[in-house]
Image (cartoon, rainbow, N blue to C red):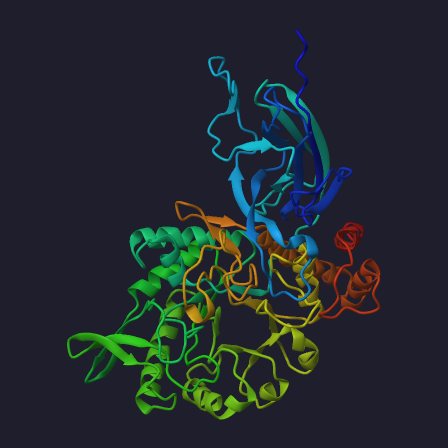
Length: 577
């Protein structure tokens, strides 16, 4: 009898910046990485089967187990792809159109292999594993592997990581790779950035079918907040009232108001029980800063936001689109509410960790309305951080916004001309070459954000979509795993996270690349504390082969980005006492 050919799986290790598309072929293994003692570090493991024929003449897949073993804590994700056939991105990477890897499904790092001799089809299986692997001869696939994902402070040293491939038809090992990871004897400092992606509570309820503010909803919300914190986010949009965002004039999004309001002859009374529960949950999940929803309508602060409350024994809309922003009763309400809210914040220990918004994206033509809004609440919030998304320096010069949150395309207009600023991008900017996190962007273009934030001394970064799954102006509901281009043909612009069938969060590759950006910023801050800012910028310019760093500075290749971080790590290592 002719001996059966041993199954052959091609496999290779590459950096976390490499997304594996179906047509990718093996490259030489990445051999080593370095990181700091409390910093997660990731890499990609890719695999595909050699083309071979089954007895029936068809191409065959090879069921496999991938075992990742190390003294370091290991987290393994199967990378799943999302389909899209259209994009309005002017500078999209050519290989990113079509079937694009992004969804991360968690696997067991080193599952137990069990032999079942009675099963002739699959005599070996992974105990407890539900995310199965099949090496295909027609498409390359990948795992995203993260070491020390929780960011614990581990012992410095050199750690081998072994990746083995087991054929589940025979139980034999058919491949092995080894990567060495150096944990440099230094600790990343806590991030001082205000990092927020707006979590939309109505989208979470609508996309999962879990009733808003039910016990089950709070349980689910906690999972999403923990996932966001795990990936670097520390600030949470807080819907004390329904956020005045992406809503056509005269219409309403689902009411997500956390604060109970009752109007009486004596004024306004507030029930903070739901808001208190929301804040406590967020604190328990690791959130450190709370971003209060906007106090006036979007794009100009011309009207009140939607406020529901009890009046004359009935729950009804007290304020809304038909309420001018300068309405005296609305001013009375806001001042009473903010006074009560600030007392609650002090009681809960977050009084010095608040970011307030007046109106989203005001322009120069909105100066008068915005100034009126500031006058209404300015003295109540006199010592609090107030910031709004801006692109006009002339608007900032009027002294209406304490903390400009600057569109990155206009960062140079504000650079060195204001005491402090945050940065943001919507993801749909028409400025080619900016940092972005779309599915069509190479990961290095996402990760370079950390350097940009450092270069402009930004206090933080804001993005409007963590889990926004509505269409334009909150019309329609879409599943980003099925139709990632639903929003303006800009794939990935509105979300960083996916929902599993049971509603639980599944992170994305792009969310991991954002975490790398935040950690790069922390590493730059550490190095600056040792050698000074000018020396740090010189190191970055040398690594990227550029005379100066600005918001259009991008690494030409993955190798340039990896070299940048290795230069930083080497400098940190050399300054150890």
